Amino acid sequence: MKKISLNLILVVFIKLYLFSQNSIDISKWIAYKMYLSGINDLKTVDYVTKTIEKQQLAKICAYDLTKQEGYVIVDNTYLIGEIKKYIDNFMLNVKFENYEQLELTKDLLLYIYYLRGNVSPSEESKQLPQFIQFGPFTQFSNDLYKIIKEYWIEKHPDAYKNLINTKKELTPEEKQELIKKTSK
Image 1 (cartoon, rainbow, N blue to C red):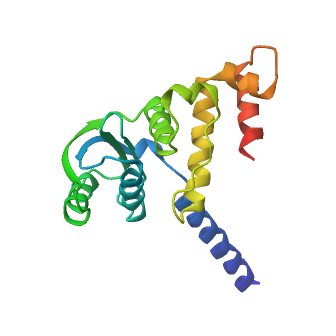
Image 2 (cartoon, one colour):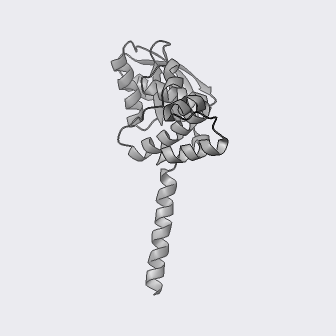
């Protein structure tokens, strides 16, 4: 009997530990705007952003070719220096010029997510964010998408209402209920 209850307790603690490892805590993330030279086409943008994510140097990396600026979201401040070293040492013809730290707001996170998905910021209010698979990190991708979708619904409730064909103004409770329904 003691063996069974000890095993049960052990299983519960392991599940709780694994669950805590998979949850996203955006409040601990740091956003940077970075300026790079040598990026002139979408193929290079794709290569740079996905490589930085794949190397686990950033949670999210996106680059705006029209403005010649990129964004990285990291969970530790030292990683911006590692990203600079990685780009300067391993990416041919691409050079890390400068960076600045930004406050990571919901709007900035949405902007970076849309930019990462190659969707123009002007289209943000017109369409629900598309799911983005971040490399082999399926759980991270799923968790982040739920958060992004929730932020989008908060920011664009009328557009969301139009998407689901409701004609009345949503109450905060209804918004939360819709978020729960669409997150499943």
